[in-house]
View 1 (cartoon, rainbow, N blue to C red):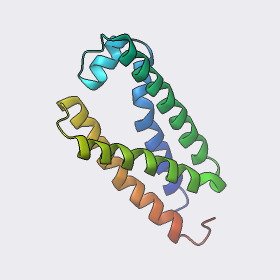
View 2: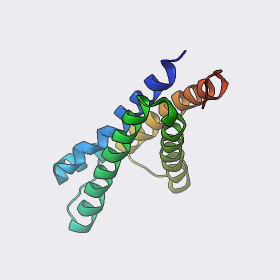
View 3: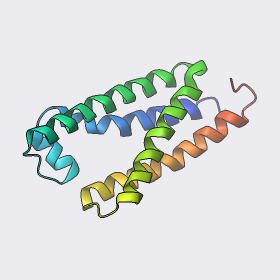
Length: 126
């Protein structure tokens, strides 16, 4: 049981690290999101988004190895996943590439619920 929350956080770190590939170029961003990234302002915003996702992934991975930070990692991942899913639902009309991201975040949410439940229910929860 004590390895479930760290495993969940590492899984979530991996999912959140994937957009980091977008830092490299606009063509990577285009392949990630299935949209042409030809406008400089959009490229700047999306590449910065990639950096922030890398930062979040690093935080989640760090939290995985710090039991006192498990709750922080779970909450940070929950905010990220739920906010994206809510925005995607509210806006709608997303393409197949973003549909893949939505499915990945639904999987992440399921894993998060399991990790959160284990964290709350285990006797040593901090």
